[in-house]
Length: 201
Image: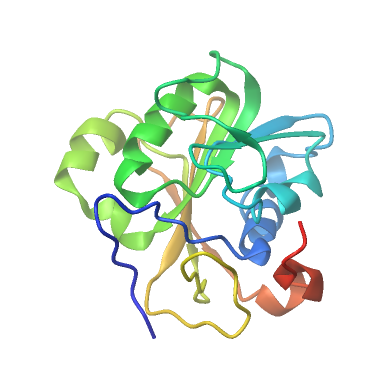
C-alpha cells in the first residue's frame, strides 16, 4: 500500500477514480442540488476523470489544466484565473502543494461553492489554519470511510493506498466557524462502473 509523496516540480498527476466524485454528489452535496441547471469548473482536470462524472449531474462543465493532457483547455488557474463568479461551483482535486491557493482563488471564481478532494492531512497545517481555515472555514469536512486509491498517471481498479482522503466544501450560502464533520459511507461498489477504467475519454 503506497503513500503519496511527490517532488516539488512534479505534475502531481494522480487521477481521481470517478466513483469518488460521484460520492461527493451522492453523499456530501445532495442538499445543494439539483445540479442540472448549475455550472462547474474543474481547473485541474488532468485527463478528465473528475470532469466526466461531474457532467453526469451538472448542466455545464468547464475543464482546464496547466498541462496538456488532451482533455479540457490548457490554462494556468493561478496566473490566468477565471472571472469572479464565473461558475456556480469549483470542484477539483488540486495539486497538494497548491491546494490552499486553489481554494482561495476558487472562493472568488465560484458563485455558490467550492469542493476539493484532498489528503486528510491537509487540515493539519498551522500555516493553512492561519491563511485559510481560520479565515475561510469550510462548511463540511467529509471523510471517506473507504480508501480512495490514486496512482500516478492513470486510474487502476486494483490499486491500493495507505493515504486517507476527504472532500472539503465551502458554501457561499452557509457561513460557519464550525464545519460539519460527515463520513462518506462505503459506496465504491455502488458508484463505480467498468467504463470508469477505460483509456478512452
